[in-house]
Length: 116
Image (cartoon, rainbow, N blue to C red; front, side, top):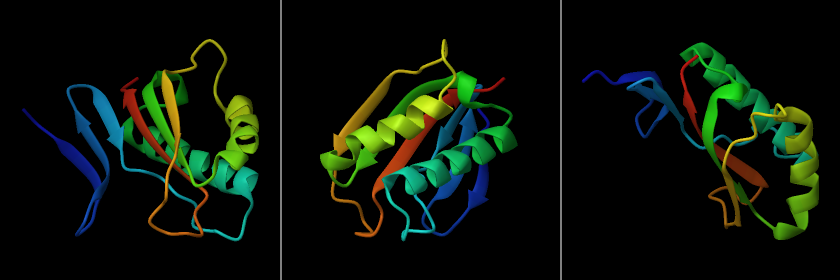
């Protein structure tokens, strides 16, 4: 049973791959001066990059969990999601309001995907 980890840090790994499944750590925006649309675009860019590096892509997402700091951001977050997610490959998804570790972060996204 092999577990491959990418971008291993002291506290977490950005990616773990096991049994043809890719698990991403929660992704947040680095530029927290952006509004919800900007932060969501940046976060989904991180998801794209990490999935590609692992040998997957957004059409292979098995499950997505989205945490937003305020449900008032729900429509803006969904507008960006709808532009990004490939139609016909929309994964099961949960979206919840949550107090995020960094108060400047408006959204955090966790993804599980299959390898291509």
